[in-house]
Structures are given as structure tokens and as C-alpha cells.
Amino acid sequence: FINTLPLRLELQALSVRDAVLDTHHRLTGLLGHEHAQLALAQRCSALPASTPLFSTLLNYRHGSATHARDEHAEAAWRGIELLHAQERTHYPLTLSIDDLGDAFALNALAAAGLDPQCICSYFVQALKRLVMALEQGGTQPLEQLTVLPAAQRTRLLATLNDTRRDYPREVPVHRLFEQRVARHPQAVAARHAEQALTYAALNTRANQLAHYLIGLGVKAQDCVGILLPRSLDLLVAQLAIGKCAAVYVPLDINAPVERQHYVLKDCRAVAVLGASTAPADLALHRIDLDRLRLDAQPSNDPGLAQGGDSVAYVMYTSGSTGLPKGVCVTHRGIARLVLNNGYADLDERDRLAFASNPAFDASTLEVWGALLNGGQVVVIDHLTLVDPTRFGEALRSHGISVLFLTTALFNHYVQVIPEALGGLRILLSGGERADPAAFRTLLALGAGVRLMNAYGPTETTTFATVCQVAQVPLDALSVPIGRPIGNTRVYVLDAHQRLAPPGVVGELYIGGDGVASGYLDRPELSAERFLLDPFSDEPGARMYRTGDLVRWREDGQLDCLGRNDDQV
Image 1 (spheres, rainbow, N blue to C red):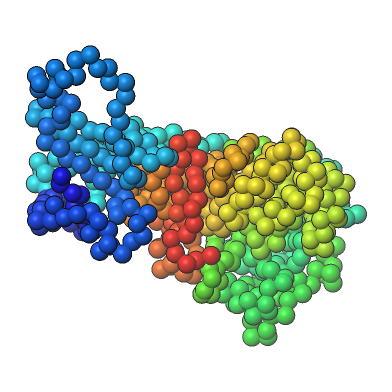
Image 2 (image 1 turned 45 degrees about the vertical axis):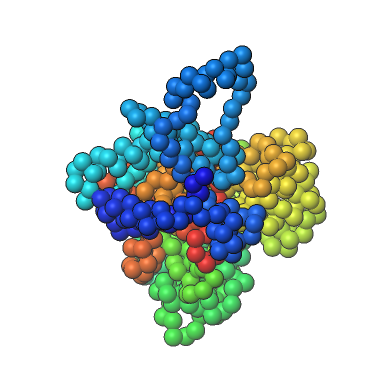
């Protein structure tokens, strides 16, 4: 018997012709070992006996016994009925090619979870592309060849990314809020404990603060820091800064003072709203809203011009190392997140809990998801949030219908206040890899809550994909991150930025209207992570390189498998 030969291919930076010649040369050099015992190869590999030596086996056979005619063999088989015959190997993937003389037969054996029919179609496509390239001289880089059939490519680019939906993409968010004010001025816009503001009252206070800031010299696209806890004042501040055509920069009040100072300096803030301890060498206005008297300020809308591609806020994020970097998010990105978004049908009946850190991008959904749909923002203070009993009571007493929880809080509160969570209309969770058991626990209640596992980096405006979780199999090891939300495109690409076939792990790239403008004053980093989108028909469209490893499932959902670097 001829034993299997281990062939290691290094095909990067090779042309098609050179790759074929190199492979032939390597294989020819191994022929002297084709009778070596497999046990010897196993010992030399230093791998445990239970570990396969290869992940893929290619078996090329000259002439198939199933097609050859042998009269003696036929006589021996007379009277015998063949019930079933199946070739088996213990390798994850085996491709067998039978050379029939005038044709080839291709057979694929694949481990569970892999579709052998797809693998055969990829192999046939690869051979076609390879032959076509050789006929044209073979100078084309091998890495440019694709194994995707046209139908599969159409599914990945068009069918799974069919997310275009109508929404006011050119209107800034404060103008959209003003439209809501005109429709129902006396409806409650925001509530905190016993305090409440109608849409008209919230708009008036925001207008007065905006006029005050304009009087201080705040101009279009200036950065204004906000150092406030979750509160009605924070909502006023965000709206007012937008009405100045400026950019709000939310800071974490619990962050080290050094980080707060760094953010204010890095964004060149012209003012900061809240009790800031910014050092004297920062030339900015320090505004304490508790002491500010705005009654004398005009109450009309300033009416400054802005477009959907103007920056609405800068939110700072960082990995496990390095300095924080400011992500510039546009008004269009916010509107696409909360209006006709394809995953949550928000309207004026909804009450959204404002429970996230204002410096965390989930707050974008909580605030603007309510205000731009005519709903109500319900501010949840920190002491209430961390006390399960108080938090559950707040959900019930305020009639909260939409809630986002970080993965850690979701996992904990599912165990201690499941009934309170089950009374919601929509419950979203995200930020870390989801725990299937936590979702199963809540689903077992049989409540009417719509459960969603949400995914998205700050650089793509909070959410890029959402999975509507209706059931979680008992053997599930993970929960998918779902499909792209409205006006969002997602691509799973290999190391050469080619489309990866379904089931194949690749890096996630995100396109569409949620992609941020880039990193503030970091042109080199922006150029590295924000790239032109080669798959979009929209001129100038860009995509964000996430660094997350994902794969398409057969059902059209995405699985997230972790990072391809050390960033957190």
C-alpha cells in the first residue's frame, strides 16, 4: 500500500504558475518516502496518537475499480446484492479524485458541520479558475483566485446584506427630535425618579443652553465634554450641544481623573458641562449646570445647518494597551441605529431604560431610540441598577418596555429577577460572548419578551448585527450574533480580503451607514481600520475592520469566535 505523504504548501505571494510548479516540485521530492510507515510519521510528528496528522486528505486514484470492467469479478459477485458501501476516513476533510480516463469523479467526506456538497463545488470552482489562469499565462497572483461559485457570492453580498431601508439619513438627530416636539409637545420625553420633562420642556431647556454655549463661542464641530451622571441634565446637554452644531464628548464620571483630563485635552474641548476638575492649563469653559441660570436665554431653536454626515459625538475607546482613541460617530449613524432599523420596532409607546454608562455606546440606543421615536427615556441611577430588587421594581413601576443589559448583568439578573425581565417587550444583551444557558433560562419562562443578542463595535455606532433569539438548543455552545441590522453590510473576509465561504472562519468587516468617520486626529490608525468598501456600489463607501473572527452559519447567522489580536 502507498502511504499518505504530508505536503505542506506555502502559497503566499506566488503566481498561479509558480504555485503549481512549487507544489509539483515538493510532491516529487516526497515520492521517495511514499512507502514509509504511518507509525513512523506519527512518532516523528511528536503529536499525541489521538491527534490527526493532517486536517485535509487529498486522494488521487488512477482509474476507479467501480468503473473498470472485470469479467472474473462480475462472476464472483453474481447472486450477491450490495446493500450499502461507504468510504470512511478519520480526517476532518477528505477529497477523493478518480481519474476515469475521459472524466473525473469527485467525492468529499467531511466532519459534522461541514457541507461536502459545498466543498465539492468550491473544489470544482478552484480548478476552473486555476485552469483559466494558466491558459492566460499563469501570472495572476494565486491569492486573487476565488473558490466561490457565482450563486454563493450573490448570497453573501446581496441576499444576506439586503438591509437597505428608508430613514432620514440627511437630517441631524436634534432636528429629528424637534420634529417629534412639534408632533406631541406635551408627551413625557424623559423621567428620572419623580421628575419628568415633556418634549416641549426638554426642547426649551436644550435651546436655552444651546444659546448660552453659542454665546461663549462654541462653533460648529467644536468638541464639548459632558461629565455628568445619567440624569435629565445629561439629556439636555446632549441636545444642546447638537443644536450648536457642535460635538458632544461623554466622559465616565467614575474614570480616573487622569483619563478624564486626557480625553478633554485630546479632543481639544472648548467647554465641559459638569463638575470637572480639569487642570488650569486646559483652556476651556467649565460649566456647572446646577449653578447656571438660563431663564434669560432665548427658547427658540438655534436652527444651525448640519448634515447627516456631520459628527454628532466622539466616544473614547481603547484596547487592553495604549491610549484611548476617540471614535467620531455621525448623525446618520445614530439615525440608522434607531429609526426603521430592522431589529426593534420602536414607537411612542415605548419606554427605554437609560441604564448604560453615558460613555458606553449602548447609551446611544437608550437615549436616541426613545427621543427620535416619540417614546420616553427612563433614567436609572447607579444605586438602582446594581440592586436587583430595586432594579426589578423600577422596571415594573415605570412600565419600561425596552432594556439593554451588558452580558455580565444579563447573566446575573436572569438568575435573580427573571420575572421582571420577562415582562419587557424587548430585551437586548451584548458586549461579551453570550451564555446560552442564560438565554435558555429566560426562554423557559414562556414570557412574551423578545430576546436579542446584539453585537457591534463603537466604530460602527453601537450595533451592527442582532440575533433574535427564539430558542437555544441544549447542546449549543454559543449564541449567534445574528444578521446585519438596517442599512448595514457585513463581510467575512480571509487574510487577502476575499470573501470567505460559509462555515469558514474569517475576519469581520462592517460597512453601511453606521461606520464612523474615523478616529479623531489619528489619520494613520483610521487608514488602517477604515477602508474603502470594494463590495458596495455606493461611491466612497467605507468598511471597518473589526479584528473579530466570525463565520457564516448555514442559516445565514453569524457566529463570533473571538479576536485575531490581543485587543479587548
